[in-house]
Length: 259
Figure 1 (cartoon, one colour):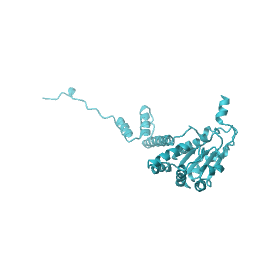
Figure 2: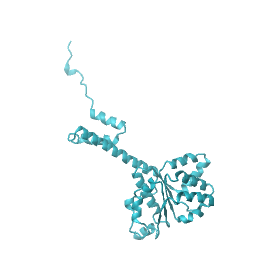
Figure 3: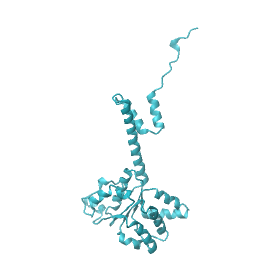
Figure 4: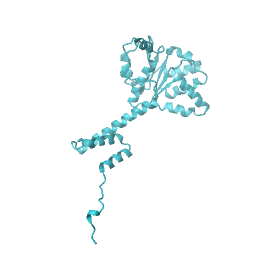
């Protein structure tokens, strides 16, 4: 008895391109997978040598991972504002020096473990400037954390009661840049002083802090509330600090007038 070739099942060849795409996604090479998928829809691959095609795929994967890292750093930083260096308004008279901001935007002060104080009345743009520098840090791959100072110290006091303060302080310590917004809005209490000192001691001359405050740094000694702790805190942050002192009307008030 002979086999009828017309009735024999046809074995389909696997789609090699589909297999390659599946492997790329399984290995989480999503940038490469997207570039490969685009090449299948056009004539890019045919116009390139194997070496240049591979180089293109690797470049797309690198760009994808770099952008994903920036997105992750920005999300974890928990910024108050979506603020960027390019959006800073220099047309309003508030004592903001463009040259100084451009120097700070290089982020050399962070690489050198130095600090930055941004002081001025409510609404003059302190938090915006701090967040803009923070976003720039994330774009450069610098791990950053933004926190309202009063809320952070309140959370850390609760953590101390729960015996989890050390773990929370280690999370903060892992960040190369810490932004403490509205620090010294009210005088520190007896539980907050040692916590703030721990944060500053851990970062001293190694990692940076941006502090925004409505009070000038000359008033911070009294706001700490204890002379010994005040000496310890200020001695560790003042000597390696850059300073921006904002003046003039509230930016929110000026925008309201324009509206």
